[in-house]
Length: 509
Image (cartoon, rainbow, N blue to C red):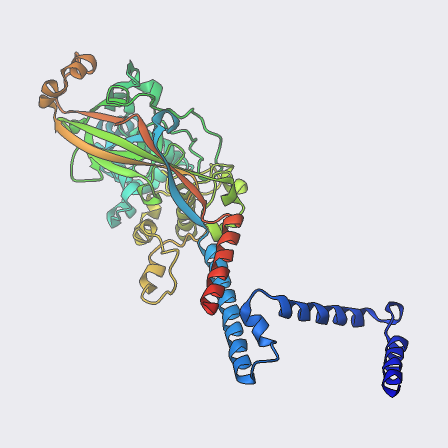
């Protein structure tokens, strides 16, 4: 009877003092639910190690060992997740080959520039001196002296310094006659070898065409040269005006369907040469870039007289997915063409950025802009013979770029002083690269190699001291690459889940 009363009394007290929901605080309810859930989890967890920790039948040593294993397991999981995540953020992009049969009709044909090694025409120089002799020779200097002085304008291209030019008596009268320094641009164009005489015959896409219709005179780092398929105006790196031409494409492969040009070397017209040789420098580059070999992706080749030179082009085009744009510039480390609109007006390129950086550096150091660089009129003065000494001083600095990804400056002290710092310039996310395979033969062998082409293109032309240049796509297909992110979000989650599963299996196997 006593036992029954005791049991009844205990049950009565439990019911009397049992907490009711309306009398419990939110904190108490939360602690109670958490305790109950945790107890249920430890009792029914599928991980054998977790259930064993709370098993009352094991000793404390075994319990400590299992707790240590659990801690190691979760530490390993967090380490792998952190490594995977930050590694993905550090190098999130990858370039993969999309196709090896991409049609060349979808590839922009490169811009081609022909620059004669002679940068000042003897006939043009004599004509200019004869026309302006009275204004340039106030002290009755001889015509030969005036011609010698005007020939020194070629130093504006190679920055070679000669003190005798700075103290020459004609310098003052020349500067007075020149007036605005921007007039040096038109003067150098007037003195350069004319494209009308350099280009003898041209053909494009299988048709013989007037060279004037497909070639124009553009400024390059070699001065005024004859350019094909360049689509930007001369203010390209300053104001980035809209394209002035429609870019050309080669639709069918082969030499006949490409660009073929007969060039006259005009050896007798040489006055001021950049190299100790005769012939042409051929620049092959992107149609939206400035022809600067130090700016990236410009191929330089040489074509000499009495030779037929063939450049077979193989192109690789790279496109980027929309997911790439979602990453910041610091992560993807490249820029799209339509970014930085305020500076480049949706025509950004790494080459144009380097040119803009080089122009800014020269303007900072020498307070002028070389005449062959794109620039707006009346913004900065154009460099003249008075500025040659400064340009010569920093000539080496303007040729090299300081390594952008340098981790430390130790051992690079000289490079910091003698190189351009263009950290704001990032590579292009989307681009087209043109690789060339060059071959050449004497012109006298050409009829035996390709009689059909000789009869079609070289008929009635005296090829003495001439140069034939053929630039064409060699095959009907090119390569298409895709810039994409390494892991999409669902791939990253899947990989993380696989890593967690592997660690758990390793801990309890």
